[in-house]
Length: 193
Length: 357
Image (cartoon, rainbow over all chains, first blue to last red; front, side, top):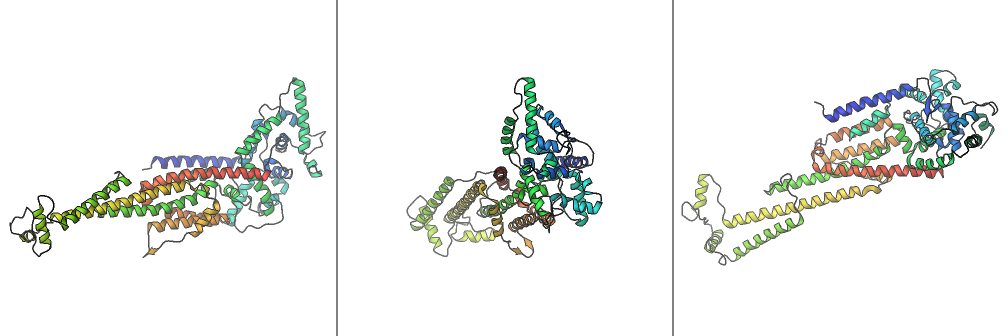
């Protein structure tokens, strides 16, 4: 006969597994996300590379200024382009942005957006070595090798999708590698004590 | 810094700021008043972010350190924060494994001492009843005084049996009896013949009856033994209370101290394959230390194996689950753990700010 605690644990584990599954499936559904009501694309490797190169404080930490919010949202916007200023849609996008009624929400919104992106990374493995390439190359190399395609094509795929492919490749190499599930593991930890 | 690549990315911060300022000017001139103070919002929110967030600090590790490693699967950087993020085990939980292990070994030892004391009390003929009042120093002192007085009384009567009470004749007779081979009985001698009572009892299959003096002596000894055992138990209770206080004072433990403490531990003794309770706790503690070491060395498979083994061992320490004292100690350990969590959390936030400036 199960105790109340065991039943509660079972129920919470089932819910946690649903949440984990839902997050992972979302990576494969084409669509947009929103940050404080502003439409943005899922965070891709290209976005991370651009913002890292621009040293965005949302990536590197530090004081966030008004233009940093504008910069981040412009880069992840569906309307982002690299056209010259006279033809770019950047001015219009930023004009609409400054008229937003609730600017407070952008900071927390961007934080949560990034947390969702990086909540489920593949675990690091032993015997890793340092080589002289950038982060994007180190992520794309095993994926291109296994699945083919072009690097430009994979740069625009959501990072959450790339993480899952990396986990599959890891499992092929080392079937015993432990699997981590953010919500399920949290419930297990709570009920362990 | 604007360079050709930044310009090509079309997301230069200064250009973005200029366009946003122009847009704000347009809105303000259209409405006739200043409706947006974006810098004010920014400064307020930066204070909030400094106190609450840690994503940027983690992502900084992700971006800058992972870039330098270049490992195909190293998507997170080094350091405990990144490790916690990679393994999805919270940092306090990682530390908590070590803290609880330390406490379990200490508690197991204290519990052993308490069990021994209870056995001594049972042997002294006065077992401590569950839920009975724990004797305080005053009780122990009083018991000692009573025992001392009884002993002095006996010694005095032995030395001068003529002196006190109406039974002095019988005391004298008892004294004589003790110093000769005849045994003199008490008032319930059925034969009326001196020395025959014990023989009569023996033939009846009963043990020889004790003289009053012998009874008094045995009572005194039992009272002394009980007082001594009670005093020892009070001392052990006091030590447990100090241990609880010491646990609460362990807020200053750093990770280095925990690791150093772990390195000092050794295995307990084994006897014909049986592992004693204290040794079980010790072994669980060592497995946890190995799990932590493997995690720090980026060996998650080995780490999980050690951790699972530690959990199995802990589940096989039966006495720990039933002891009320252990529950109390674990409660104080949880308070310590929460305090350490907040301390670690504060340090992480603060270290994030230090890296910025």
